[in-house]
Length: 358
View 1 (cartoon, rainbow, N blue to C red):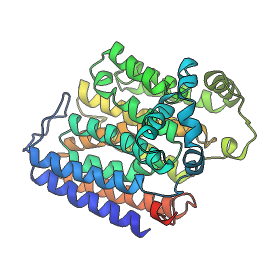
View 2 (view 1 turned 180 degrees about the vertical axis):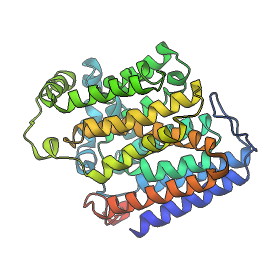
View 3 (view 1 turned 45 degrees about the vertical axis):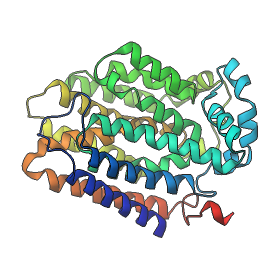
C-alpha cells in the first residue's frame, strides 16, 4: 500500500499548491471554460504526471494487464482489420502507433494510461475552478479504474471529453464523442442516453419514474444481457462468476452517497440549470449502481459516470458556503478510506509492482 499512499499524498500536496497559486474564484457554479493561473496549471500538471508515471510504470497490476501486456503485438497488428469492421479499433490504434516508436508491451500500456488520465484531467481542469479537490477525488475514485478493462477505460476518457457539449446541450458534438468512445468500447453507445436525462427537472415525479425504471431493469436482467449480446456482438456466459457476481455493498453505497447527500441538501433550495445538471449526474451515477448491483460485469457502466461525479462534487460543494471546506475534507477522507479498503483487498491491485521488477 506504500506506493498508493505516497502517490495520493504527492497528488494532494501538489494539488493544494496549485490551489494556492490559482486565481481567486467566486462561489458561482462553473458553466463554461475556466481559466487558471499559469503557476496553478504547472502544479496541476505535475500532479497529473505523478498519476501517469505510477499508473504507466506498474507491472501486472490490474485484472487485464496480462492480456494487454502479453498480446500487445496482436492488438497492434489487428488495427486495420478492427477499423474496417468498427470492432473497437481505439486501443489497437494507440498500440499500433506506439509500436512504431517502441515495440514493447510496457510502452503501449504507458501511452494508453497517459492518454486515459490526461484526457479526463484536462476536461476537469478546463471546466471547474475547484481543481485541487478535482484531481484529489479523481485519484481516489477513477485512477485505479484505468488499471482494469483498458479498452473500456479508454472509452470512458474519450466519452468524458464530450462533457462540455453534454452540459451545453450540443447534441451533434456530444454525439461525435459518443461515437469515438464507441470505437474504443461498444458499451459507450449506451451512455448516449445521458443527454436525454441530465437536464430534466429534479422533482418527486421524475425521481419516482427513474426509481420505477431502475426496479424494472433489476428484474429484467435476461433482457439486459440479450441487449448486451447484440451490442457487443458476442455471447456472454450469464452463469459465469464475474457476470453473475453481486457488487460489494460498500461500492454501491459509495456510488449512491454523493447523489443522496447533495439531493437532500438542495431539495428545498431554488433549482437552477447549473445545479440541476450536476445533481442529475450524481443521481444517475447512483441509479446505475443500484441497477447493476447483481452483476459485477454490468456494474462497469459506472466507470463512464465516475468522472462526472468528480466534477459534480467539485461544483455542488460550492453551495455549502460556510461548511464548504469541511464537506470537501469529509468527502476526501471517506473516499480515501473506501479506496484504501478496496485496493488492500484486491489481489489485482496490491501489492504494487513496478515495471523494472519484471
